[in-house]
Length: 140
Image 1 (cartoon, rainbow, N blue to C red):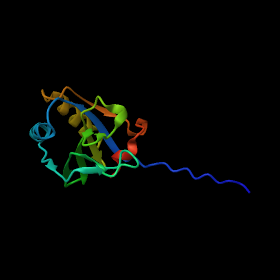
Image 2 (tube, helix red, strand yellow; image 1 turned 180 degrees about the horizontal axis):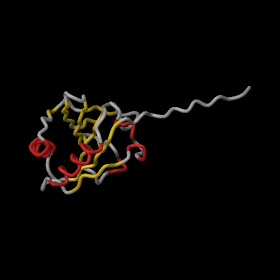
Image 3 (tube, one colour; image 1 turned 135 degrees about the vertical axis):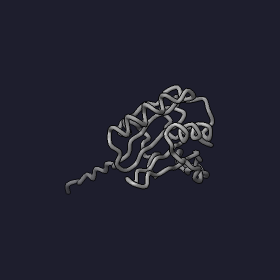
């Protein structure tokens, strides 16, 4: 009898920007709203089962904003939560800025450069989600 192997590849159809800053999440969102003219609002905490066998899922602060015209969703997610890190291999990252649905390169470059111009943000860098080991934690 021959074995059939099923390969499952996760579709990572989003852009991820790593943000480093010493500020609390609500303060960073205030500056993002001010500089990018967004209206990020707090959502219920993101629940992620980081460690198998734990009774309680880890909770991560998350904010959302949507461009109505293009239906592009923006999520601002804390990397450090109640029970550890959302992306444990990237402990040096404080927050992630996730962009779902279509965004053109000009708008993306404008967003990244504007984030880097915010004095309270030390760095904002685009990262490749496919290179992250625990990328499943970013699927919601």
